[in-house]
Amino acid sequence: MNGQPNTRLSDLFGLAGWSKGELARLVNRQAAAMGHPQLATDTSRVRRWIDTGEIPRDPVPRVLAVLFTERLGRVVTTEDLGLVRQGRPGKRQGDGSVEHPDGVPWAPERTASVLTEFTGMDLMLNRRGLVGAGAALAAGSALSSAMHDWLHADPALAADAPRTHDPLHVDPAAADRYEAAPIGSQEIEELERSVEVFRAWDASRGGGLQRKAVVGQLNEVGGMLAYRHPDHLQRRLWGVAANLAVLAGWMSHDVGLEPTAQKYFVIAAHAAREGGDRPRAGEALSRAARQMVHLGKPDDALDLMKLAKSGGGEEALPRTKAMLYTIEAWAQASMGRGQAMRRTLGLAEDLFVSDKGDVEPPSWMQMFDEADLHGMQALAYRTLAEHDPAAASVAQRHAKLAIELRAKGRDRSQIFDYISLASACFIADDPEQADRYARLALVSINSNSSHRTWDRLREMFRLTAQYSDYPKIQDLREEIKLALPKGVKAGGRTARA
Image 1 (cartoon, one colour):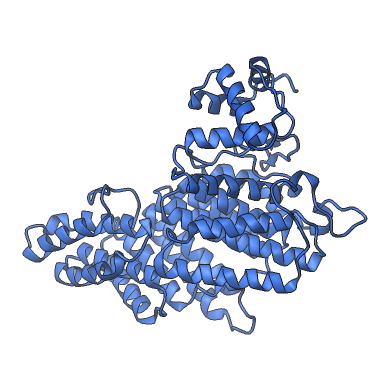
Image 2 (cartoon, rainbow, N blue to C red):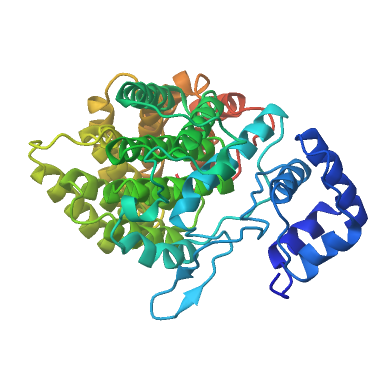
């Protein structure tokens, strides 16, 4: 007990709309259902949790997390409730210590338990048909400030993880959520292959259909990490966790679960850092930056990109750095900063061609090829064309190159290429060509579960308005309306295409 009100718990308690007595009864009932029939909570204890910051003993924090998750319809963890006894506050450069609202970064030994708890709650929402809504995204500046010093510190897995005389040690607090046992290199290889399967499916069909499977696999890996393996295996397992967390975040973003996606990107950065892979941590944060641009928050994206580039370390390959610069350029384009965008894309091109290919890129970078480079350049120039229509012709050139170079199985990226190309044609006052490429995008969009493709399609629909007197464009507008899922309006503007 610290004598100070628990504002996190108080805020969520207010949102839930319970009385203190009602919450006490629900805690007792849920605890019994979770195998703890001896638990007896009353109104006065609930009052102490909220008003004086008393942290109840296990399993009460986990019980409360389940109750609030169910009530609010989004993932709520013990971190969110302010019920974690040990943690490490974030550091703000030149400004002392500041605690981030989401507890970022948490203490290293907490990463596996945070990962497992969050995925478990996410799966519970999936099973019960609820959606992750109502939470707020943390601003890019808040995330980068909280994580700066932590990400730049030397990763030291051996020092971070608790040890006993037994090298295969399991944290007892994790025992009831996963029956931890040692695994070997063969099992880790199988997990690494599963990541590749999930990644290929996501690139082809979007994140909706496989998101639950990825979250479930990540939950299993979190449990495995509760067991202390030899360092070489533990690092590989952290790598699997980072890759799965990025996928879970990207798939969540793809289906519009934005706060959930952001949490997974942060978890991925923690996991990569625990495994000593700074470039992977930087790439995970760059995903959060891409999310911010998509949601119309390019200034937050630039904050995150500064951290992603600096925190990735010098060991990042030129191609990885090139990818990071393309995201930064997209954010600059969203703000109408044409000169800065062109300069940044120039750096990306130089880095990309300087990569001699003599070092095998990590699995998570193999998707960023020449087609992706042109696709991101097309997106940046098409976005800039909203401010400077002259950029539309350059966007068309890059989009056509991306389409020409796209490998089979990259269906979602190809849809984006066609939408970028059609949008650029509309801006360049070429409705005939725009109609052609828009229809190519519509051919496969219905077999894709990506909400982001719908967002981009809505942006393209907005550009058709000035040509609505053209018979072809009238037909196209009707086809776009039919292609969008029920309940999704064609005229909305929720993201920058």
